[in-house]
Length: 234
Image (cartoon, rainbow, N blue to C red; front, side):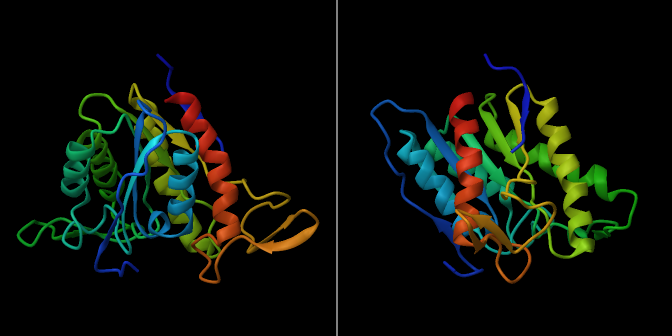
């Protein structure tokens, strides 16, 4: 058994991206990829393809504009539990955060109805949601690979991503089969955020103009770093 480790390394906004399994080699492990906008887009597609090419049976589910902050918009723990019950994955790759740097919805009849980002209760409540999600997708100790959020163009947003990354890493470190995968510092020759990186002697766009998501080239770089780490541990 592998020990706990940290690896450094639409459809429309109203619809979940639910893809049919991609078959790897006979008898291969099954890996599910789950997340919000980034997993719905280029990065999720590249991770799914690379895992399938490595011989795993894969399935990806994503919903744009979603996360763990607004269960009134999309109840991820409930949805993911259903996906995993049907697919029975051996491991799950997860990425949330881009839509979660906001107030947490607690329920129409809850008091308080919202926990604001600035409130003292935000961190423990969000951590509880990360833990609940992990329990929902890995009830029998399946491996979870939680990808942290990358650098952001906005300093304010980047600070929020760092707070959430700390929570993801802490929760994964506390789980016997939890793995935190950092996505910071992966672009060649780049320190911090940059829309471009030098690849094969050419300046190539690696992030989209919104300052949040990856371009196709950037997604390939991240997938090339993430997938070998996942494959080695599964």
